[in-house]
Amino acid sequence: MPALSTTRPLVIVCLLINELLSNLTSRVCVSKDWALMVSFIQARNVTLSFKPKNREPVTALNNFNLDVARGEFVSIVGPSGCGKSTFLNILLGLIEPDNGQMQLNGTRITGPSQERAMVFQEFGLLPWRTVTANVELGLELKGVPAEQRLARANELIKLVGLSGFERHYPHELSGGMKQRVGLARALATEPEVLLMDEPFAALDAQTRDLMQAELLQIWERTQKTVLFVTHSIEEAAYLSDRVVVMTARPGRTKDILKIHLPRPRDYEMRLTPEFNEIKLRIWEVLKEELTSRG
Ligand code: ADP
Ligand code: MG
Image (cartoon, rainbow, N blue to C red; front, side):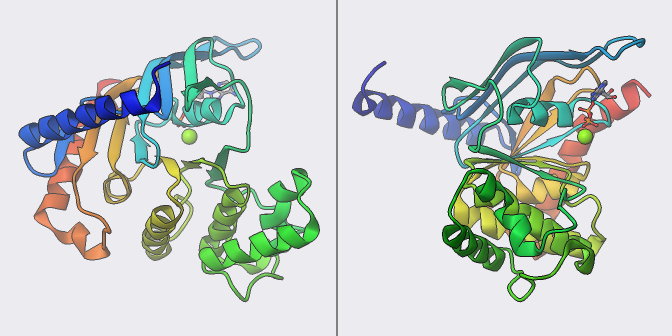
């Protein structure tokens, strides 16, 4: 393994070439990704079939490849059933692939770990626990002392904009508020990677817009690496550094589009011709997969 001082210039040269190639090839704000990056998350030929009893096996992923840099915000879009959730579950360490490898920071993923946390669409809150107690859950399982847990929970409740609701129960909260609790809970154990599986799909349109903007602020503040699954092209374009389009099942990477919109991004940005062009580019890639196999 070369020393850090010798690898750094090489990394910088790679990034410069990458940037140069992106600039040369971008028509407006979207360009192909040239994969010259320092990989933090690495999926190599990940293949997985489910083998339910008394039914035909289902190949969910077939040679799925992806590289994600540390601190990147990457969205994944693809037809229903193409293996998006399966991929996140493998990354979370809940399922092992049949073939291929998943690595985080150079280490093979072999099971769950607190460096990776998931935010689910259906929130996954415990109804008998208050907001604070839900946020504290992961810290409790880790054996963190009560005083520290409370201090950390309060900090996160503030970060997600829920101050004043600490003692409320989930049934007393709106969908947006429940998802804020889900986000605070996922952040509590200080994961490096945040996996989000259609986290805003159950929210009304305005709450969704608000949550997207707030998620961006939180991401900028906490500098997590985010993998975000969504069915919304607009959401993917607005939030992401890159958008991965998957094929219909068995899922593979069909294309990766780099979103060159400046940050911080505001809502008005979505009304620009550049933003529409980005959405169109993503749609053009995705539509082939939606129409090719019914
Ligand atoms: P997506 O999230 O892209 O909609 P999933 O990853 O949930 O898709 O599922 C991919 C495919 O694998 C689907 O055909 C689904 O029915 C199948 N599948 C997912 N989980 C299981 C399971 N536990 N047992 C059997 N088949 C499954
Ligand atoms: Mg899914």
